[in-house]
Length: 235
Image (cartoon, rainbow, N blue to C red):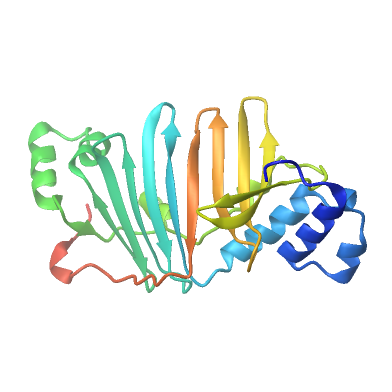
C-alpha cells in the first residue's frame, strides 16, 4: 500500500489518475515529472466548481487556523485566527469586500491610537463588519485573504524529478502522494486518484510554517453579504 510505485504499475496508475493523452501514456514513466503532474492537479483544483480549504499550522511558532470557501463564481468567505484570540473574517461577494476584526486584532493593529480612541473604536466595531477599499494606498491587507484560489506558489522547487509517487488514501479516498524535500522542510501533496485530479491535502513539516491544508470539493458554498445593519463605515 505504501511502497513506492513500481514502473509498470506506475504507468497505469498515472494514466488512469490524470487522464493523460495516449502520447503521454506511451512515454516512459521516467519522462513524467512531478512538475507536470502537479501542474495538472493545480489547474483542476483552481477550476473546481466549489471548494473549501482548511489550514491548521504555525507561523513563526504561533498557531494559525483558517477556513476559506469559494463558490466558483468569484465569491468567497474566510475565517482566520492567530493564536487563541486574534481573529479576522472576510467576505467577498459581487465585487464588494467586508472585513470583521476581533478585539485582539483591533488592539494589535490600532495600537497607535490613544487609549480613549482605541476603546471607542473597539466599542464601535465590536462584532461588526467594515467595507474597506480594496485598492489604493489606504487599502488594508485583509481583503487579499479572500481572493481567487491560486496555488502557483506550490509549483516552485519540484524540478524535473520523475513522478514516482506513493499510493495512499485521504479520508478513505484513493490518492497519490508526491513529496518534495527542502533544506529545512518537507512538503507532501496528496492528489486524488479517482475523478478529477484534485489536490486533497498538503502537509508541510519543518521550517517556519509547518502545517496541514485540506480541500473539500463540490459541496454547496453560499456567500452572502452581511446584513446592512451590521456594517459600519471604515476609518
